[in-house]
Image (cartoon, rainbow over all chains, first blue to last red; front, side, top):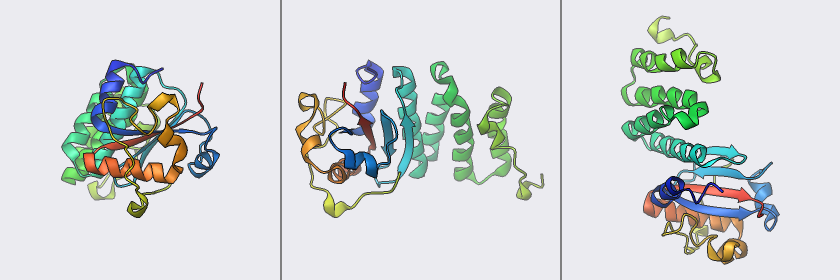
Length: 151
Length: 66
């Protein structure tokens, strides 16, 4: 079980409201939520905006980083760009969640861009993503031509 | 996922982020009286209402016990 892990429990206590749905007792809920497999974790902003979904068991340290990614996406949705960037950066630098690092680095750039509207800065912010994870699908997302930058 | 959040439905259940990571919506006895007795959408709305009050993120865990 990942929830009793002290760091996970502390994160949940401090930043989340949690609800559990037993899909064997509430099949209607599973249908409405389009649950294919359990466990499925869905993250929502307090305004009812879906932030993220994770399917399958997560060991504690990976769950912890998923929680932080959800908080970061929530901060981004709420225009708290500095907080979002810091959280994404934290995930990107966590060795135990290396598979989440490319996504986190991608969003570091997006958070900065949404704050500053600076294409050149966005390109610079994405450089670590392209250098550290060149084969990742997140690096591929940065390879578009930017008409405003004349690339 | 689809967007929800009809404030009118929110019944103000005792959903809160208290001392347990899994609060009143599920914690009691492992199966959770509130979780089992309230319709899903009402539970979700209650969680959203609590999250708005406390400026938190909502996590919904769909699971099979055991």
